[in-house]
Amino acid sequence: MPVVHGPNHLDEFLGSLDQSLQVQAATLGEALDAYERAFRVRIAPAVGYDGRYFLYLDLDSGDEQQIDIHVQRSDGEFCARQDRDLPLQDDDVILLMGLMAC
Image: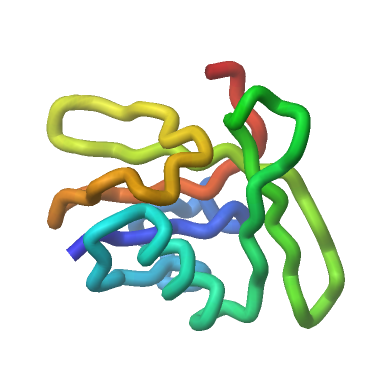
């Protein structure tokens, strides 16, 4: 099953259970929906960035940050852009991270 890693603990990355979630999802949108429910956050497309970035809002603290979403697969890593219909593979790792140039 795909795994989603949140933006606040990427330095600990794969060893961290905090803000990481294994999801049963066929698309990026389904994975993001499951992550939102599990961690009480809202992930919405950011406007004005050529369809690349998202806003990540923590519903408890009100903190908001811009994030970039990348997918790691066995054959490499790529920017998912705002494609919520992106099909996922079972071994995908979805990275919600600070802005990158992609």
